[in-house]
Length: 426
Ligand code: SPD
Image (tube, rainbow, N blue to C red; front, side, top):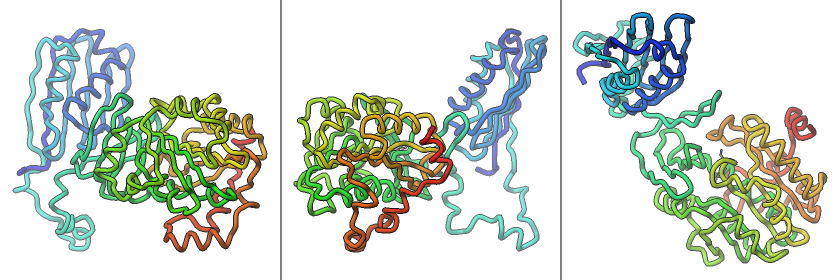
């Protein structure tokens, strides 16, 4: 491109007055226009100036869409500014023409930041500070972000723009992106599941504390965990004779084998029985006392994993555990998912007894807030601090060259800050 951006100045005439004074409709229309142009939406702010018009802006990764409306004249003034060449502002124009029900519209385009007119700032130090290094210049024209967001918080990871995997399974949308900061990223229904660069924190910690505390874990069940990371960690323990992994979604397994091979590295291990079926059905049918350790490596409690966050499910898991058995569950974030966090711990305590439920905190930079929790629940009271062998753990961590788990982290992870203690005692 011989310019930095494209700016279209738009007029819409003969729009219905009720539409031009409807802040919700206008906000939706502007968001949809950004989506129709494949822009990456960051946020939106809209104001209704009762009884007059609406003003608002949608900030997109590639710049912005802004509007002001005059219902009394059936007129709206819009401007759409997009940087780079990935987002076509004229797609926004067409989209709004329809959604504002304009009788007619007109627009003109201005090229912004003509390269021939730009000259580098003179102060060499300042220039250097802001200048794109030669070595990465080639990627600067594409600036594409994956964003996991809820109403108030968003986490963005910049990626190459190439979608390595995208498929809709009967259960969820499965995607893999290649991020600059964290390597390959597995996303289910818009939520970060794991990344190449920080996966070891979660996978080591959902596996080893229970396996190092249990006196002799031979049979392990994993519910979920389709990327294979938890299974990879469990199979480091020679005492484990059999791992049954029950994953509902074949596409998660396929995507992981294809794009996250160092996480999905043990699918061919003869000690692994892989079952592609619903974990809820599996635990209902499996015999009593059939597993020493059970890991619930689920997604968040919306979509296919919803049934894994219920009392009836955990009661079945309790039934499946041997007398000294231990359940480890990903128990969401005490910062981000406060309500779910409190509810499931209260549920665990009702099933396992308050003394046998322990919360661990781990730091996973790509999960919302970075602060995540795992629940350690033991059926026969095997205690995670009193019953683990420090020396054996140290030797195991060193032999396996683990990146996160060691004998100190084992104990430290169970130390809780006061705000978490307060949440758990409520
Ligand atoms: N919001 C993220 C919760 C993800 C928990 N499961 C991750 C799966 C990794 N094996």
